Amino acid sequence: MHGQDVRLDGVSITYPNGFTAVHPTDLTIEAGEFFSILGPSGCGKTTILRAVSGFVDPSAGRILIGGQDMAGISPERRPTALIFQNLALFPLMSVRENVAFGLEARGKPKRERLARAQELLDLVALGDQGDKKPTELSGGQRQRVAIARALAVEPAVLLLDEPLSALDLKLRQHMRAELRAIQQKTGVTFIYITHDQGEALTMSDRIAVMNNGRIEQVGTCDAVYSSPVSAFAASFVGEVNAIAGRATGAEGGYLRVDTALGPLVARNPNGLAAGAMVYVFVRPEAVTLHPGADDNRLAVHFERRDLEGAFVTLHLRAEANGQAIAAQLPNTGASGDAAAIRAVGFSRDAAIALPEGALAKTGKEDMAAQ
Ligand SMILES: Nc1ncnc2c1ncn2[C@@H]1O[C@H](COP(=O)(O)OP(=O)(O)O)[C@@H](O)[C@H]1O
Ligand SMILES: [Mg+2]
Image (cartoon, rainbow, N blue to C red):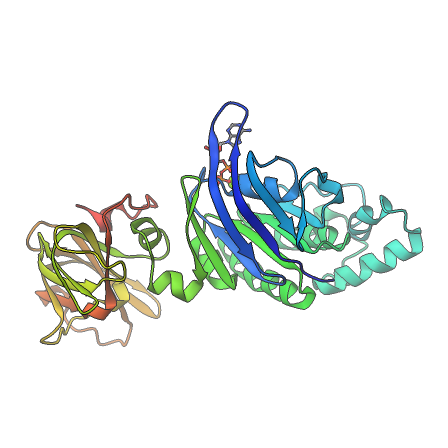
């Protein structure tokens, strides 16, 4: 199997009712890449996959797979296969027959189909399960059968639309590693859609952060996590403290910001100037109980301590206005007397100032209160 690259060239998608689900988008996904599109429900992820697979036509722009323009090419003639949450395996067929099914349409003889199905079951580590019925398998095993079935037609691009969302947490985490392994073994291009940032960060070579029909950022997981380009990307990918303020001056790549919690200094990748309304973003793991002389400082009081195994999360409140501030520390077993904390800090390099904008609503509102 061989992956191919996928290019969106000025693609926008407006549904017949006049609603534009995807605004003009340029995007290149490399051959053999595990690429995730990450964004909240309704942002347009599935619409992009439908366009790549050929079930909806772009209203403008072009989609190229392996350099070939897909305009006018029907779904079954595209080098793509689609997997979604509801698997629709055939209950009366064996697992092996389910996988072989896709090859029937291609007119391969039965012996060859079943032999190929066996290879694919081996690939997804179900080599000894081929004679069972789908109902005799676990949810995760059924998901792997669906993947094997999709791979049977030898797609260059596998499109996965939230395929794990019906599984329980433990299984989902296990399947992340399985999916990644299958992708690497086959070299097929994976375009994986999810609203779960943990999934996107653990599996992907690169991710696109999508909001309201627009891709706001494309990059490696590390780049998106440590250098988000928008308030939305900063708040959707990972936990973050967001402190609103007004810039008072820029200097040497940093921005000084007046906030209700006092003056702060943060990285200024966008070259914002005095007067700009901004958020200063800092990750909980960058907040320290022992700020140095040059660090930003916040006067806080202790509210709650959550033990999360390897980490402890301290939930604090700013003295100035009661804004929630989270600090995440390694659980050394000696985090001291949390209730006595009066101040925390963070370095200017750990903080990033971005233009004010809508924050992600993913149950993190509390951390980003005004
Ligand atoms: N057939 C359709 N007609 C009109 N609007 C649609 C249609 N399908 C989806 N939408 C709308 O387009 C937006 C994006 O939908 P979708 O791509 O399914 O989002 P996601 O997969 O990110 O949850 C949503 O607002 C949805 O209601
Ligand atoms: Mg969807």
